[in-house]
Amino acid sequence: MSPPPGIVTGPGGVDFDLRQGPFADDPYPILDWLREHRPVCWHRHLEAWLVTRYDDVRAVVGDETRFLPALPPEPQAQRRHFILMNGQEHRQFRRLLAPSFTKAALAQAVEPALPALVRDILDRLPAEDGEIDLVSAVADRVPPAVIRHLTRMDDFDEDRFMADADAFLEYAADPSDPELAASGPDAHRRVVAWLSHVLATHRAERRGGIVTDLLEARVEGRPLAEPELLAFC
Image (tube, rainbow, N blue to C red; front, side):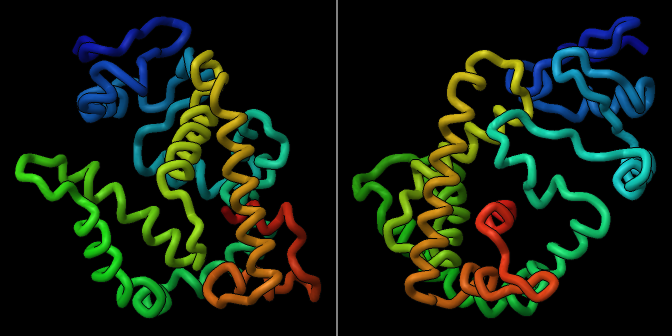
């Protein structure tokens, strides 16, 4: 069976554009083909191994001896991000976060606020008649509204933060892209600067919630250092 449109195969691996073209429009035909014909393969542009079958992915994620997360590109501070920790270190830090993200905790912290958050988003929609894109105008606005609620920061610039977060995550996923490399590091610095501002605000005035919980958490009897706190974000 020949590969679907959008994927190039050869002895050196496979290649396809993740950000535009057939994969971006509908990834499932390419993923289905990879699972059937190249379940483990080298992606030439990403310079990374792709593992597409469920059992293989579970085996890789669960093997802390042979498989480790790849370090992201600079800035260096991001290299200790929570999702890139391994083994006991990861489990130790995950235990700090777990109580705040249980179903019961989220039901108490987020669910009661959601109706008001969504009403605020709807109230800001244009008043004139016409069509809107429900995803971009409403659904995409909910996550930053929840972040503002959880961090308890009234000066949260939702548009700026989400744009910077998206820019850095795209850069971390494909650092070889010149356009992303031009914007990703600066976007990350702005994200870290705002998160540092959040931490400083909560240190000066305990506002409760997840940020205060992290500031008051202890690992082996000591408070978390600034880089460790930022690693959760």
